[in-house]
Image 1 (cartoon, helix red, strand yellow):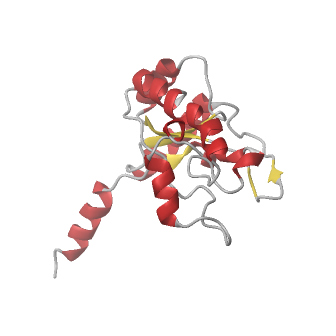
Image 2: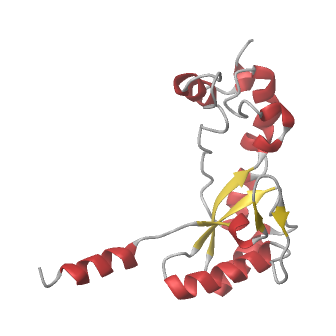
Length: 171
């Protein structure tokens, strides 16, 4: 029993928490964003803030980027900047779900036309290219993306839409 606090402390120190880049920006609600002085203006400054969080916690080195919000001209330079700060680029997320057509989902939308519209942004652009420039393994986005609202298609249909490319289907 005497080692229990040490075991808990060790377990807490061994975890890795990936923070989202949007967490280092202006805060607000879905109705309004509240601008603040000193807020990072670009992904380089967001990584600097993330480094400050990691310096205090010791467990928050990875930072997930959100494209197009975190778009930069040179992702290799961004990854090098992160490494110099003691953090790293984590998962890369594309924000295709913000399009008006995506209110029922994006890559898992029930309409194959919408899936075709967003798939090039997911499969061919920016995540695979960013993965090779940042040294991370591109990850597949979760299959929720707005499809679980009342009246929408169910989880099985979303998974089926996600795992069979839209361009290989006939509507």
